[in-house]
Picture (cartoon, chains in turn orange, blue, cyan, green):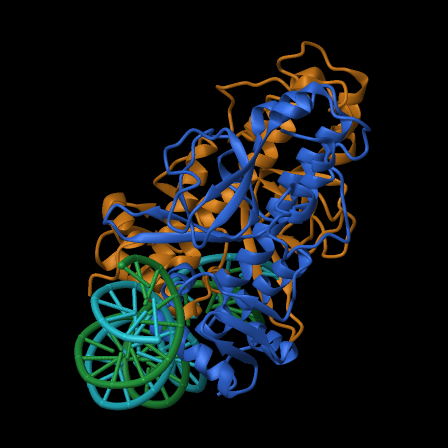
Length: 253
Length: 253
DNA sequence: GCCATAAATTGATTTTTGTCAACATGTTTT
DNA sequence: AAAACATGTTGACAAAAATCAATTTATGGC
């Protein structure tokens, strides 16, 4: 089931071929590098990864209240996570794209606090966290890997989330989030300037604290001003410079 | 300089006595527990903590661009962190109170991306991160400790930051932030209902993406409605239930 | 304790954003 | 391919928040 080459890193992989959903192609580099420095696989390694669970659009990788046992890696597809407020309203807590991790906020509590639902058909791998932790007792590589995973998550949260909290206008929020999304796609080796928004305008609005109509209007304005091209959920960034300006500065007029 | 009892955990400590600024009294439990399970101190332990740097109001624990070498623990006092935008405007990225950690977002990049400045006279301890990492090669306790530190930070970021991003009104933002502050004080063994806001209304507004006048008006409204009592920067939460309601639900009228 | 300065409050007004509603465009199912 | 449904766009208006400005209240330095 698990063969050695699942762990090795391959730069020139063909991403669009659906046969290649194995981790060495999924661009979750932090994890793919795992073991690459240690030669052959140990017995422990074989147990720590559960591969390629297929999750159809609308299905749940995990639910709030589930025990946390593994770090989820998204091989392909996209997932949103959300929490339910007492009054029944939902608060979307994040969008997770191909190559990213989910559910790390539960590593210490050992219990998921959010629901995760697939926005499109998605493949995930699961790294069994307790096994990875155990592996740390013997493997230097495993230790460094887990530090890197956790540290990256902290840096990611700070970088992505802070500008959104402090944004003084809806324009700033949306521009900042589009740019951070763009960066995230780039980091996974995908196009920086052209990508698919897998979430609805409503979801995006919920996440950013904006009405869906406001999101829609802002998109229209960005298109009018030539900043982006938009066709349904496919977006292209045409003027990154000016978009960056909008993300930090107050609205022009 | 570093004695064994710096590491041991003492529950009934006297917090208000200024003589007791040692870690066993500073309530950064994650760190104070360190070594408590391993008997006496090893030689390595002695090198990893730099203790009780005094930082006066307005001074900088670290600056953006500084190399990251240690995790900062706030023993007493309060610190804000902020980033400078290109246009010269500042974005406050967080407030850090007694017992909390700062600067963890730089663990992987090894370079600080924010300035940190003391809001009042503050004592910090520094855990030398590279030494702590090395210690992980030999110490089980150190391994678990570092996982817990990083994991707690991730959970903290998610819990505190997400409701602020998704908040649909200024009221929600401020109520949510006051409650999260309250929780943070509680976790450090301080009063949940009564505490000092070490930051100005302007700082709070900058952080939350609100005008300082809006923050001020909301405070006044909360006082009028009996939710809180406010005297300068000293706040008391009188009606936690209703405040929690405001944090999740849309404004009442 | 007093003074100078910084911070906070409050009011009037403008700008931004949310809400409600109608209509258009996409997507999924059959 | 058409129908049914979900999603997205746009306009008119109401509500919320920002800005500008004047005044009051705290704070730090002496």
